Amino acid sequence: MNNSVTIITPNDRDVVLTRIFDAPRQLVFDALTRPELLARWYGPAGWTLLVCEIDLRVGGKWHFVSQRPDGKKFGQLGVYQEIVPGQRIVNTETWEDWGAGETLVTTVLVEHAGRTTLTSTVRFPSQAVRDTVLKGGMASGAEQEYEKLAAFLAETQAVARRS
Image 1 (cartoon, helix red, strand yellow):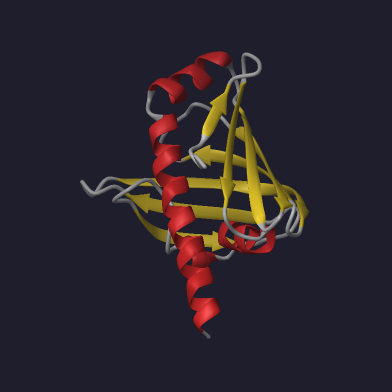
Image 2 (cartoon, rainbow, N blue to C red; image 1 turned 90 degrees about the vertical axis):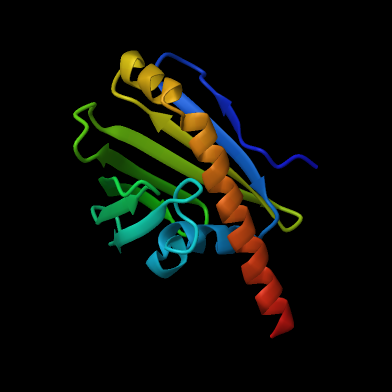
């Protein structure tokens, strides 16, 4: 089965990314919310997560700093708006050093037969910002990042089975 990411633009401001992972929902949720796990997979191929601060509660803040292979660093930050443990996260996201405005990201996890469908809806402040991000490589970056997450989840489950 093909587990690649699908990306749709249902309206002029949203991008919806969907990917199925061969892992239980709680493990995927943990990989998205625990700094020590995020550090092992977050970002496109070759990127490193240097800073990962998460206050996982409604009103709590998060802050990431990632580094590309060429050394350039990117900061992201936001505030959690809604958290349903193991199922749903809604948060704002702003990229430091890029004045394009704030996005609202809604991530939903649904498990069926031990596999989890992750659906992430990103609402951009305008169609122009959304289109700029799409043209800037959002699809390839998401595909690389989700491949890293899939590999991390497979490795984590393999280690658990051997224990």
